Image (cartoon, rainbow, N blue to C red; front, top):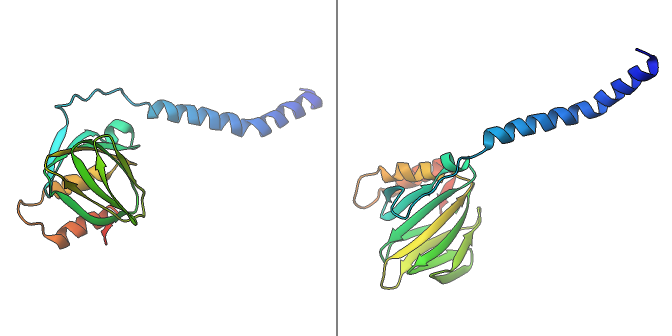
Amino acid sequence: MKRKEFLKSTIAVGLFGPVLARQKSNTAQMKSDIMSPKIVRSNEGHTINVIGDIQTFKLTGKDTNGQFTLIEEHNEPGTAIPMHVHEHEDEVFKVIEGQMELKVGDITTILNAGDIGFGPRGVPHAWKIVGTQKAKVILSVFPSGIEHMFEELGQLPAGPPDFPKVAGICGKYGIKFV
């Protein structure tokens, strides 16, 4: 190989080799991250009772490659979750039926059917089902993983919750009561 051709090929590989390698690696990663489509009917999903909060997992991290979890909650008036903070997740609440009182930071409001509330990580929030009818709320959590905590909480014995035990389980997942 002539010196000039050698230098051209060496410079090209030196400059563009890492870029081409990254592109190849990213393409391989994208292929492994491709998710399968999933249809979840209204009567489908895994339902658990999390200390009185009736949740049906519609999509979990297994379905979304860890990107998010989608839970349908169907609760009686009076069902509530006390003020707490997420270290890792953002939550979006969409009321489908009924009413939910949502407190996020310094804002307290009533969400009606069609309304959405956003609870960003690091901001204390709480909710309570209010009004006279059951409420159906879609909870979207970004990223996924919280479903594992809910599964653990759902295994606790029925009856008044053992708050230190609940706080311990939640703490393992970066959630603290305030």
